[in-house]
Length: 104
Image (cartoon, rainbow, N blue to C red):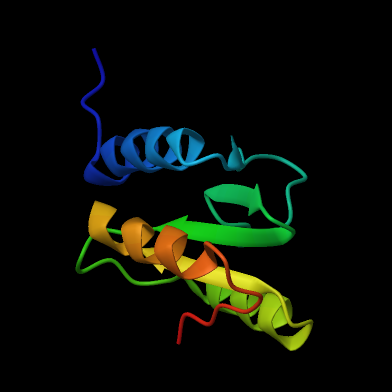
């Protein structure tokens, strides 16, 4: 059986947490024909669409991921890098009851 990576473990925990908090969440599968650098997860709540890239504490965004992030932010979109579960607690807390969230 294939060993689960730290990012894979984090993905399941983050998805479960966000769903419990009322988010619509789906995993973006990388593969043939997908937009280069697309983040791991897309989450939607209260009109906010957030692209979430999961990384280990030392993980770095690839060049394509940085380009995707820049494109999202140039269009006033929300891109969030999650390195630990506590990061997504912060994301959820900042979205609750607000009209703007910035992860910079």
